[in-house]
Length: 425
Image 1 (cartoon, rainbow, N blue to C red):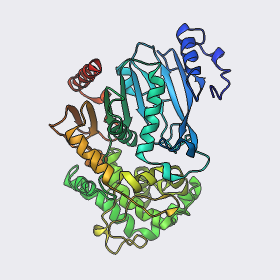
Image 2: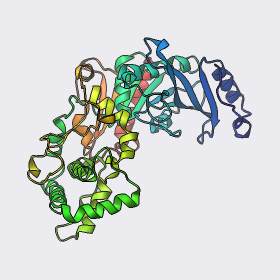
Image 3: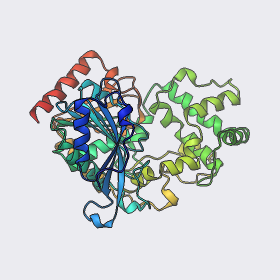
Image 4: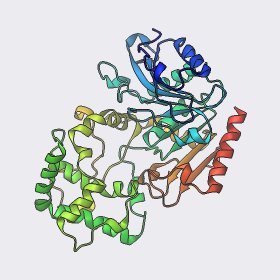
């Protein structure tokens, strides 16, 4: 198979006549089992394409079937380096990573196996594991490496950053360096480091105000739940995986995690004199119920499978809410909601092996974290036994811990180190 798409848009795009775009199209046509369609190129780039790449369900046993993985190729020049963006979820459209701009690079952005349109006809979760997911990336690296021969760098954000770490672990020679952003490396189904972080982040006054919101929500259950039912009805939320009452309790437990992860402002927390509607409006703005509705359960099913089988996650301490939780009975409920409520068969061997590798053998890695981001609790710790950099950015959260928000000194240190590693590749 050479091409599944009719690239009728090519002639309409401004780069269609360029010699470089024509050469790239010819070389893409020559790749086995790669389909492509032209899309609008970002400003400053010569061409961009949506790719569909044939991948085996099982890279060690290709006869077991295949699927097509979606990726986006953005081309600057054949002489530029390549940034591989390793997504952790679905990727419905092309997005440019800041690292690509800083390096004046080409970019291939890869949707994760079993998310979005990168799915087989039947979801057999047997084939959703990190060894297979990183083998997908390696296959893409081998295919496009025949076109792009300059140094490659991998990067990803959050779960995509986790993918970056695991990809480098399984294929250490595929790239010259790796730059995971805000990437946790959880060691258990309910990693206790999350509790330790939430018990010390911010000031005592902020933590007390957060706890007061949780307690007031639970104590006001009879007032809150009818309002939440109307909210859910208006938002079109359905609750069959779990009841709305149980979703409410999970959301209350989740509140501090979300507050710090997304960098909410302490000044926005309603005081004790605020009415229940003001409290509820704030609560929905921080957590809400949509994360526990059926739509999210379906959208994140593959994510929960990975968390419950290999990657670990976090849980909730219910001790402060004794007597106030009616639906959640567990002492330490997990935040993992397995597809179809399948049992969890978590095996920590891989994450512990990768953790040890990050401390002893993972050279040429750059880790970027936000100091107030909850996921920093389970981030990769600093080690003086590897040639790597860590940036824990003060006051930054999951969405703002980025190179563009660093000091000029930090940014130059990061980029000069990265460019030095790329030159040595």
